[in-house]
Amino acid sequence: MKASPSAILSRVQFTDEVAGIVAAWSKERPDLDSSPMLVLSRISRLARRLDLERRKAFADHGLEPWEFDVLSSLRRAGRMSGLTPGALMAELLVSSGTMTNRIDRLESKGLVSRSPSPEDRRVVLVTLSDSGRERVDGALAALLACEEAILAPLHEDARHQLASLLTSLLLPFEAHAASETRAATETHAGARKNERKL
Image (cartoon, rainbow, N blue to C red; front, side, top):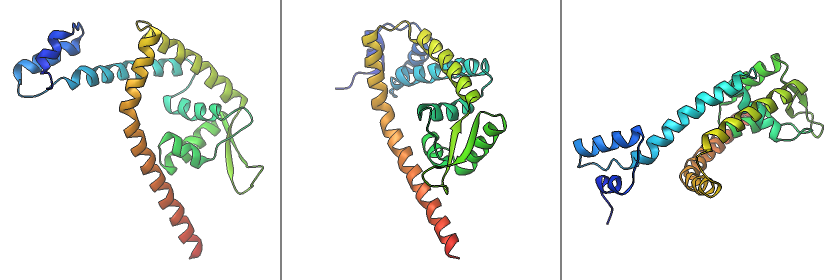
């Protein structure tokens, strides 16, 4: 039998604002199970806090969050590698137009460059410049220091457990997003193929 929100609150001692909010809802609307807020409202508040800290870390290195996302994708690809605009689009879950605009802006800042693939010159690869690599490496170090400070209250085992639990929540959303991205890519490719036939 599922425990009531009031029973859950009575078993665990919480001292943050979320606990007060849930307790108030449980009192005013005892017909509703407000216990999901104990988890998801905390995740939401942590996400907002992390977003603020991320923005500060990136701003200290002259980057916007979206710029870091693109540069870090390229950095993870390896020093001598690059990624196609399509690969970046799929990884970052943005539209083709948005991705093109972002690459244009990063290229104008000298942080990335476009060049034909050595394997197929019809394919364009986006690669990090030395300046882009230096910028993203500095921002990453600042971000990790910030994240370490946020997680400081948790010991290593607790971190692993939390990571596992969050993965279980996140995987269904990622699978759905990946499916939508594949469908959009296939639709775009089909449209391009039909254009060539006309």
